Every structure is written in C-alpha cells, then in structure tokens.
Length: 117
Image (cartoon, rainbow, N blue to C red; front, side, top):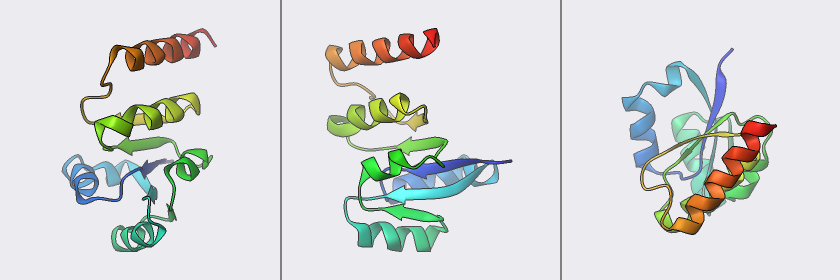
C-alpha cells in the first residue's frame, strides 16, 4: 500500500520535484495546501491531488498524511517542519532547513524526544 504525500506549497517547484524523482509511482498524491484555498483547489484539480487546504496547519492535522514536501521559504520553513515532526509526519525539504542556532536546538530536542519514545 502506498503512503500519502502532501505538499505545503502549491507551486510548480513542488510538482517538478515530484516528477523528477518519480514520487507519484511510490506515493499517493494525497493533499496540497496554499494560503489561498482557491489556489489550492485549482492546483489539486490540475495535478490530481485528492484533497486541498487553505491553511498549512489544516493539512498537517490531516491524519491521512504520511509525508510532507516542504519547499516553503526559509523564514517560515522551520515552523512547519517542526509541526510535521511533532505530528509524526515525515518531511522532505530543500535547504536550508534552519536559519539560526535556536531552530537547530529545537530540532535536536524534538528528534531526541522521538528517539526515546
């Protein structure tokens, strides 16, 4: 059974990455999100995603999401990677994933707490 892939940013860069790495052959194109629900809906219909959301947090709360592709800008990327990891969602991202040492400390703390569970 294929795992479900969701993307946090409804943009061409995400689709190009999915196609280049042939992710749709191993993962279901499950959901996408955008800050604008109309943009998310058009993107979902164009690229055959099953669901769409007008808020990143709503997508992260969806229990059907197994993997999230996060190509958000560096300034907000950490917040959503952190939420995904906290909700046991695997994250695929580009770089950089942190922009300062505080973000890195939070990642380390979260990862270490998950390893102990």
